[in-house]
Length: 326
Ligand code: SF4
Ligand code: SF4
Image (tube, rainbow, N blue to C red; front, side, top):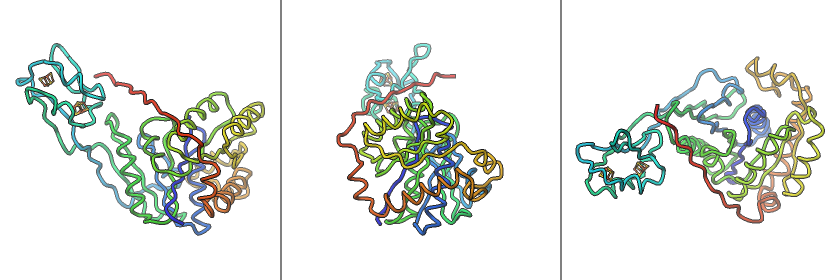
């Protein structure tokens, strides 16, 4: 099997995504799949907690490429940099042109356009860390990233985390990514290049609405989606609506995990539920999902991909939210 990327994602946080990611990684590795897990939620990484890791084997610093700044004594206040900056990073404060370092992506458009040659760059700013567990107790490596609060470019850090995980995995095997919640740049970086997305939902109206947004994003990247309904029995009225959407959109529902107290209890013990309570109802369903993914999806992934990949490309329009200066 060549390198296959499976992203566990959800439109909303707190739906049990990391518990499911960790359990699937452990179960697939136990079945003999060559697998590397990557935590690509660089703002709130927690897969290592779910996997019971309290010490990393290796930690590397992650540097941002460059951030622009303006030499005030050279600036003629012509406004060209503000006009050309694609990220809206140039601000006018008390009559001076300044670059918001939390927005600047270092793309050099402004310095190329500045007639006064007033723009310079700072290099080598530590923006986060990449952490490695060479072998978790479940037998596979984990790569995780953590952005320093306030630094931009979490999507670039996620790409770095993915690249490191791929380097460990090599050209064959399963790269299992535990993505951030939502549809932001971290999720976009996680989904880029993936074949499969396991979308996790809870049976609530809000979760279904968020599912539609993340599903739209997977369609943009031409990814074959699968659906897992977590705590499916807490709100039976919503199940019909979720099934209806899945049927309309050709999304296979590969699992329905019941509400089970053994899940939070296992997290408190620093263990996966499939290890701590292997006979619990949640563990039995997680094992069934892992069996299904192993036998139906991964064993003949090209056929599965061609059956469930989107039929047409979905356009995606990004929303840029500008942080305010403190
Ligand atoms: S383009 Fe250059 S000179 Fe013009 S406002 Fe920006 S920094 Fe100043
Ligand atoms: S380097 Fe790019 S992102 Fe940064 S201020 Fe200049 S144009 Fe904007």
